[in-house]
Length: 199
Image 1 (cartoon, rainbow, N blue to C red):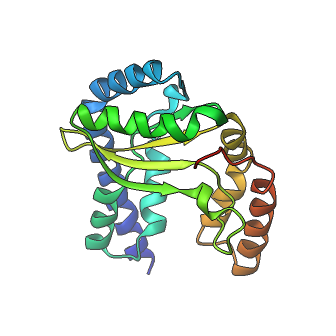
Image 2 (cartoon, rainbow, N blue to C red; image 1 turned 90 degrees about the vertical axis):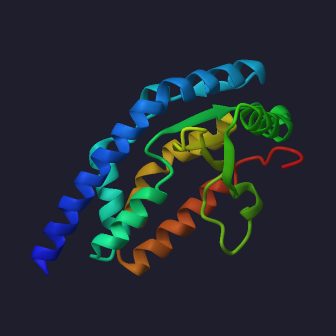
């Protein structure tokens, strides 16, 4: 079992390096386009210094998501959407309209919105993850996958404050009882966040 775990970790390390190399190659143009649309839509681009997921974090994510299969870990790696990631902040009043305008702008520039996850819709739902925001998986014309998160100041603060809870919950070593406790805490924290109109 330990040999398989070591093999999986080694493969995750190799894949993480490949993902970061590709992301760094395509990042300058993507960052330029994100900065341009942020300015155009009066959004605040935050966390640019953390636009690349760290190699250690990426290795941990790939390893945790895999089930000790090299083929599977490769599939996970190439579907990974946050090796490169960006966050835009909008005021609650501008949020609904302007996040759509951002995506329209990127479409015109040759980007494709591959997946859109609107966590605002899950508020007070039994599947509420205790997260607020919209996360878009986007593919550039160079086939670089990246994540673009849309937040209000409040929802971003929630994400930051609950980060340690989130990490604990997704850790495979965390027991089911503790995961249920964490879910409840995160839902309570998220219930206080005002949902933007029209979202």
